[in-house]
Image (tube, rainbow, N blue to C red; front, side, top):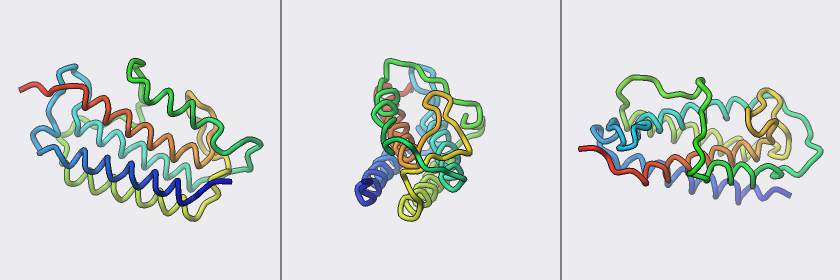
Length: 168
């Protein structure tokens, strides 16, 4: 049985950490290139926002009963996203734009999308498989697995950014 309150608590904690993390950047550092040449904090924030928007659409979409545990793929999703040694390639649909990012705007939008996700956790059957989209690496996922994919994905990017010192 899915403990909805535990899922909400995990999502709220992830959201709180994510918002606090991105709020620690001023506008200049939010758009500053990392020493390894990867995405800026602002680009990562927009990338996370785009994924959360996509996940919310998936969570609202059609679904069917699963013939497996609702969290069957969660451990593998966590393992893949939290293995920082492995380079992952994001789908083009969730790439950040080439524009300068406003931290306050993006943070507000992330907060809004995460709030929508919490509402869906409260109202949707998390054990059902979402049928509108199949993840390129994990296949069909339950609503519960999509929520945790969002959480682990955000954690990956925060850990990655913490590893690098910004160029002056």
